[in-house]
Image (cartoon, rainbow, N blue to C red; front, side, top):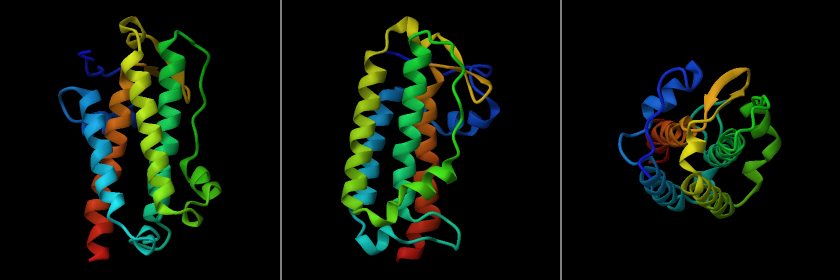
Length: 175
């Protein structure tokens, strides 16, 4: 498809770190490879390890995995609405409130991983089927401009950010 990286002005500054974190090249291929990376990482964890928090007040690995699914669903929904030309302002969301309501620690890690896989596959399907003209559409989310084109990069960079945090802060504590 050759989806072009979004330009500043197509997303809010709050998303800039995720855009920067997104690897260069074919964003859809990177999203597919990232799914495999997440499956390998989370698939190697025990239930007890899934409950691990690297510090008090931080999410468990299970909660972080469910956050990846929740956020990606929201990003994909935004892409669908914006990419179809819907200019209705979209709300933001409170990730901490979602995490608190989700009860991730009460769910089996394998179920959470299967959920992330299903979410990513659905996201990839949406992105692969987006008409070229849809990528140029812009809308508003959380009071700020957002292009459809920016959302695959936000999905990739958001998950990359959290996978990096897992490798740097969570995994050393599991050894």
